Image (cartoon, rainbow, N blue to C red; front, side):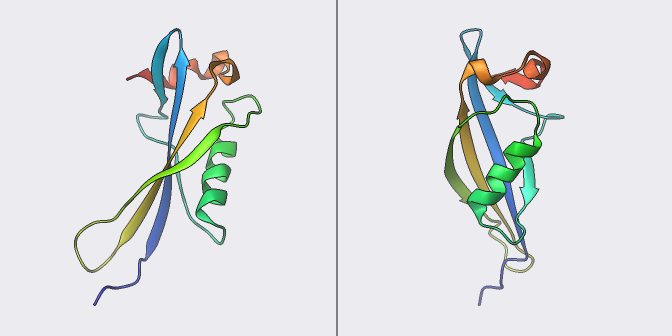
Amino acid sequence: MFGKPQHFTVKLVLFTILDGSLKIFLEQSKLPQGDVGGGSLDQTAKQIFSRLNHFKQTNAYLEQLYTFSPPEVGEREITVVYYLLLPGHTISDASREFWELL
């Protein structure tokens, strides 16, 4: 039978429109992510976003996008992906270097 998941991760895909183009936020060429602790998936996603420190206070639109898991039985990692839509005016000048053109 299936084993219990041993590791839960939440990843964030942050989108915005900057200079008339759709862009995605990447830190060191990676999506922001974190491990799920004792809280809910939504709480974990919000905590990851709040730790980024690149954004002015905002009520970004947050929604769960998809859940991924490897097809192999054995050690299992479950990744839940959320996306956030951010208004361009919430993006600080200092963080523009982290936004990549799609």
